[in-house]
Length: 169
Image 1 (spheres, one colour):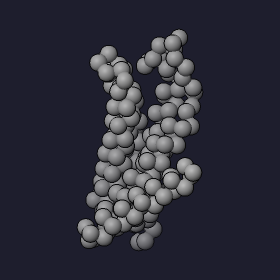
Image 2 (cartoon, helix red, strand yellow):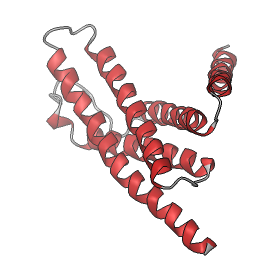
Image 3 (cartoon, one colour):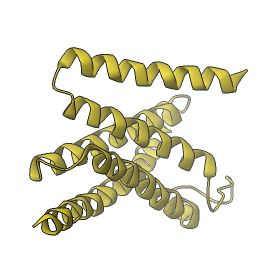
């Protein structure tokens, strides 16, 4: 009986991860077209708006996937949900970066811009943001008290700020 529960957990996680990863990759790729459209109206802010839209899409997809998997299977452990959120962010960002690198003609004029096949900096940035969002989503979902969930989320944010500050020195 316990083996069926474990297999069922992983089935829910796998199905949710596959659909969410595809939605995330498509959403991130769509942000490039939004940036291209904004180049005519606001060229100074087009890239910033694209990054903000990408962060919003990552937050929306990762937190929705975690909440969906948790509502489908109520007894999934928190570490599995965090792992699922991290996997969605990493694989979705990987697909986005690969497509962006190998098909630059779809978005940019390659004669006037240089696009590298794989951009480790954007991959690492968006994957790291996805991991943080997965952790905070599980905290918000699994901690019963709103006060303590807010305290834990703020401790995560403060810890990240301390790490960024210490590496910035």
